[in-house]
Image (cartoon, rainbow, N blue to C red):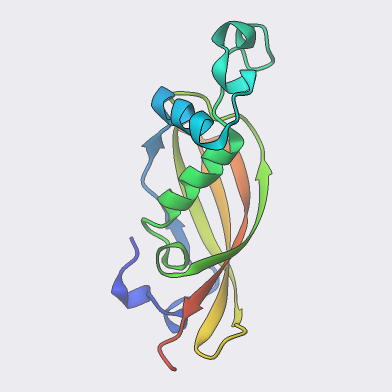
Length: 150
């Protein structure tokens, strides 16, 4: 869990790892995300159609998984909890199924000076894993994090 003790750039170390709590992706999540995003693709909304698909059932939106992982990461990873997200490079490796419980494994892979005085750039690799230990999404994010020194 992130704390005020690791809220600043100087407190972080390359290689440090974090694991988020889990969160179950629900029917309500998918319905609300479809409404919010306007993405009513049959992958997410048509149970009968999806019975005959590669997945055999409806799946969550990939971008819903990306959004959930950011929230989960912010509950334990300092860069996500205290920093400003500036870039994302992301891969969708497998489906997130309704009822899956996902969590995020994060590892700090880069620390370097930022463009503004007193602000530094933190690069984090993340994996989104389901309850079966399968990596369903992974990628890298960059965050601007404050420095103890002005």
